[in-house]
Image (cartoon, rainbow, N blue to C red; front, side, top):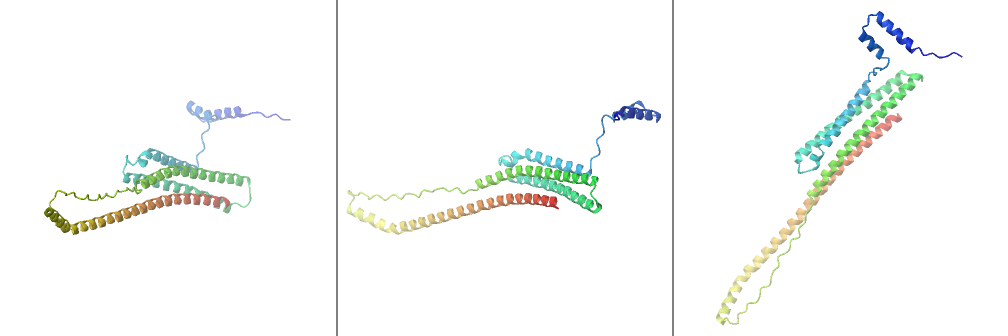
Length: 271
């Protein structure tokens, strides 16, 4: 039975002798010998570079959300226009990240098509190629889940803003007390002369139509106020429902988009 011998040191010595014969300096020789101990990292593929760039973009998006979180939620720190600008910037970030992820997906699909067109028999290289494609699919899935977790954070902030807007426009009904009409006390004029009593009665008879007209005007004014109050409550209730529908529509569209991405990924895996 033959014994195995480690010839690594012999190989290093041969390399050192060859380097000296080619005129290597001491610094060049030291760099050459150190390369046997610390190997240089292999160059990264274009897919890996694109994936790292996408991850950096997602991290930048997360930093932006954390930085402007208080400004977006607290209505006393910023105006509505500034909050809209923050939401617009986040939308641009998310769109760019999704486009980068889609580019990675398309690159994987293109590699798979090229592999199927150029491959006839299953070989060892083919197996390693399949492992690489599976690894790339996993990278894309991790990036998609990371982007989803970041956008979910901003969706929670957006829901707080919508809830705040709903609470701000909620109808505040104030119960208005009707003015109490005190009955007129009967005048006591036991000491009044008969002539004076007749004059007072004539004056009350002359002012009676005016009192009736004022009472009718008061009734019409009160009825108009009640009608306007009911209309205001109806308008505020409609505005609240519209804001709720807008918030639900946005959340629904976000979930539908995420489900579509998952379905597309599963379809690509099956295909």
